Length: 407
Image (cartoon, rainbow, N blue to C red; front, side, top):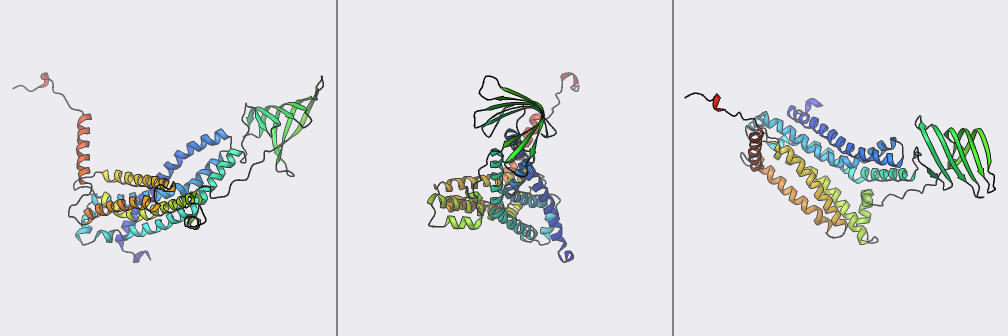
């Protein structure tokens, strides 16, 4: 089957996919690493297990992928055509009668596949994964994920027990220097100190755990003048876990709605106007983010071809700036439309129309106008600026009078 595909298409496919996958990996890694540091700090403050950080990062992958996919697609096509242009292969292809539309056939097939993936992400996978992330964060804050007792600090449990641990070893399985103060309904207070202990789960009551203490003393204050003192070799202290409220249902925010729910709420007469505006804004935002991908091959070609006898990478820089800036404009448009200040169609599709017109004009300059350069003025200005910087910071030899040639 591969032999039936023209060699030109196979060649362009290799040129596009390799840098595209690399950009996917780099962009996703950078976004996740930035979030990972904040999640580690958050989990450390809340005293939760380290493993929950990776669960939360996994829940954020679809959200970051919705931006990384268009960016990777753009840079993959751009770097492929830039290589063809610099190596003069593009000139040969054009000379034998191959149009840009013919050269873009494989990139547009890749674009169609990635658009389908992005539709599944933004309309189905991303809302569910975002809700799962919020659920993990809620459970971490409420202690449902097994938040640990902080060493060297008093921790209140079930409003009747204060517990302090001096040292923790073997990932919390072995506790050293334990002090507990327990009060009951009768007003009696137990002050318990022990050399070491460990938490044990119970099979009959999942809401209760056992703190098994070893080599300690119990001082029982019964209200009389003389408290009772008891030494023990081993003592089991039951601890009631705090009740955790059930997490809310999915749909607290519009970004948690999947496509059928957005359509039902956004165009329903039974919902409030504010809810309809927010749902329609979210729907249109997701739509423009997907449709925008159809313009990426044209933008990539327009920015990939540097001027003759030049290897300037200004187009690569501009491509990233344009895509990220347009994404931010869409986010602002969604926010304003959700507040009811603008119609969602105007707030999101007018910037798209302007962005599309700019891309089509840039592609026309490259594909139709002989020698056209849509960013030619910027290339000239960038080249002059680079020369000035090199001249400013370059090493210039100063000729001294002693070394001057004799006349």
